[in-house]
Length: 140
Image (tube, rainbow, N blue to C red; front, top):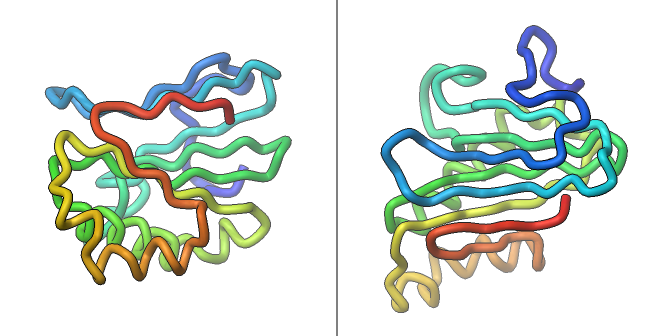
């Protein structure tokens, strides 16, 4: 477990791990069909108390893959900057993991998806950033 002093909010071999904020429809669901060892943390306000940060961190400990997850209304650039800020703060703890970036927005404006500010994150993370509206469900 990379985050010492914090307990995972899911069971060790959970089959499905859902990241969702109360009162918001968007969610991320990690499907753990192989029943790998997983950990899940609420970052915003729990692990990191202040500043820019994403909402959740989901880690497949067996595959050494970490998912930084941001649930957002519509501001994609802000969401990406929160993922980057969280990565920076947790850099040492996540150094042995392959990072994946996920943004689940309530709605997206086409011009924002193609903006230069958002494109810089897409280029920086080379295909590891997935953004969708309403939900993302994926095998982890």
